[in-house]
Image (cartoon, rainbow, N blue to C red; front, side, top):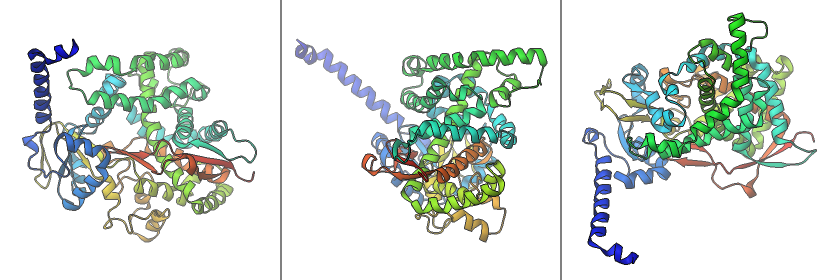
Amino acid sequence: MQMDALSSPLSFASVGAGIAFVAVYLYRTYTSPKLDCFPTVGPSGLIGAIRFLTHSLEIVQDGYEKHKNAAFKVADLTHRWTVVLSRSHLDDIGRALDTELSFGEAANENIQVQYTMSPAILQDLYHNSILRSQLTRNLGAVYGDVRNELVVAFEETLDLKADEWKSVTAIEMIRNVVCRISNRTFVGLPLCRDPEWVDLNTQLTVAVVKEGVLLMRLPKFIRPLASKWITRRTERTSRAARQLETIIKDRQRHMKEYGKEWSDKPNDLLQWCMDEGRETTVDQLAVRMMAINFAAIQTTSNGFAQALYYLATGPQYAEMLREEVETIVKEHGWTKEALTHMRKIDSFLKEVQRFEGPAVLGVPRKALQDVKLSDGTVIPKGTFVSLPTYAIHHDQVIYEHPDVFDPLRFVRLEDTRRGPESRFQLVAVSRDSLTFGFGKSACPGRFFAAVIMKSMLAHVVVEYDVKLDGDRSPRQKRMIFGAHLGPHPAIRIAFRRRGA
């Protein structure tokens, strides 16, 4: 009976119409006359977009070598086409207005913020100015809490016994520790240690990306309806609101009674957002805290996981770093000031960023209108553009022996080159160092992220021996998915307390 139904003329016509519709949709999707002026690198169309998922590194490197001082395009599933600009276009990106080349719109396209979190996050990024100003200014004041939470988080998360070696999944352990350290500054004690709050925000980093990937594959008109089934946004908001409700309402009572200041007023990110006064309900502030956690935990955890891999596979690095840390801590203690003197720690992390990095393509922008660059290149409205950050970081014209991991590279550059030393520091954003972005949209929380990563690395080399658990880890150190690059999620690192 089923065979009879399938063999009917109407069924054949329906299947044929469906195939034709898909074929026309795909043809129109990957046909863009406005972009014909940009040479295509790699296969075109859907085949090229699928290949880009696993071969983006080779495709972009090929384009970089062939069109080093010009733009080219690659097919990808995220944006159909991405125009890859050259390093010579960075000044244009830096000068461009947000109404011309928008980082926010490009980021939204990747994770579909209005569906995975809230339209309010997309419409008002007021927390970014708080991260740039108040958080950065208060790093010295909050460092004691950062250090305390770091020590306790490592102790409780690893839970080492005597002289045992304990193997852990690196990225999971690091997310847990980073979440606790970050939230000590975001929401304070005791919530930063609450297992449910930690679970919510560590799982958020994975869930939002997965949901965003699914939604961006769908036609725009379907996304509002599909998001109700694909995302767990409502559940996440309810969980976060339950955790924060008592804290927020208690603080609101104090604000109503005492105004802007009172004796034990919390000095954390939640309070700074409440002082701003743009959001007043528990749900609004809960979503804001989740959005901040998503950005902070994702980038810091991936960056430190990459650093831990190199530490675990190069025991000679640990000895060199440990000597520096112990010497400086002996003089300055465990303080933010001490971190500024840890040049080898800083250089090690920056070299990991250069050598690995978070992306094959970075500095994403979406053209909100036709944009003409200084060399005459025209970016049509609606086009997504990026920079070949991995290729730039591995360019032998920019870096000597770029394919060699050199943990003291930036210490030597500081010592031998003229110009401000800050150019070679971990937090620096320049034409040669694009991990934290570029221009006005450079990561607003990078100074906080650097404090956390440097503190974690310094703590690990002093307190633990680490090694790669080769028997239980994959052969690959990284995972590439389209334009994104990160530590392999299955890598396991073994820890042992030093001196045990």
